[in-house]
Image (cartoon, rainbow, N blue to C red; front, side, top):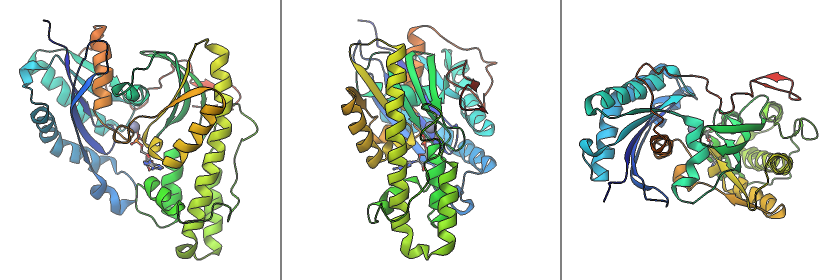
Length: 357
Ligand code: KG4
Ligand code: ZN
């Protein structure tokens, strides 16, 4: 019997050093044999955000160890690996280069193909690590650097329906958290604080809620929170502010998702409409709940990656590597790191949003 392909995935696009081994499983969901993540939370905490040079240095220090750990946990040997996949972008160039060069070196020494992976495609396909999911489907990608609605039509085949015209959603969570005196990355903390507050205490803006199709905007929210924090004792009020912020985000996403459903249906005729919400912010339970309601109302099936696959990880990179491997889409070793690498190549200018993206 022929051996099922075994792929090593490496991820170093930002502040997580990660490696994973996955194995194809016939027509079923691939098996994750290991998924190791080393977070640099402590390295960047005091700076309130990711410092690229420090992140790159931490990747260099950890990458060898993390890859070896992933291999050990998988119970496989280097010689059994069929291809080495690594994130080539988008992300911080100094960070991407570490994982990319490590993967290229391994590919040379193992004499196995090298595959470059778009990090966003990893998030986009991530639910396929635990669910059988057919193309096309609607995707809401909500991470620290990106916020987009896309029609996912196939591997490497994306149509962008809407995007943020300013801050990414994760960025809005993190900046608001900082204003409330919460450590970076504050997104998960806002969710915790919000549970103890009154969501109706503050009225925050919902920029472009009634225009711009399913494009989104979050910068005004952070400014509004900043104004409020100047006039109150935020130590006392941070619970109410977090709750009001979370509620406003939920309302924006609910409304814009409904528009995206319509846009998706205009260009796709599928028997069963699926709606995937992926990226770090997809770990937010309150957002999951409201988007589940929106989906049920419009007869879309809501699909979320498991919580451990929402944030940056290498299993999703190995997954894209596996899909490309099956199509023999290998890359040459001169493949560069790409700090910018949009999923939809035709979406460099979005009509209606009025912004260059
Ligand atoms: O996908 P991800 O791990 O990294 C990027 O590719 O950007 O996303 C990280 C973002 C951060 O902004 C973090 O604060 C946010 O996801 N995040 C959350 C939650 N968990 C992570 N935001 C809101 N609620 C959460 N529970
Ligand atoms: Zn990510």
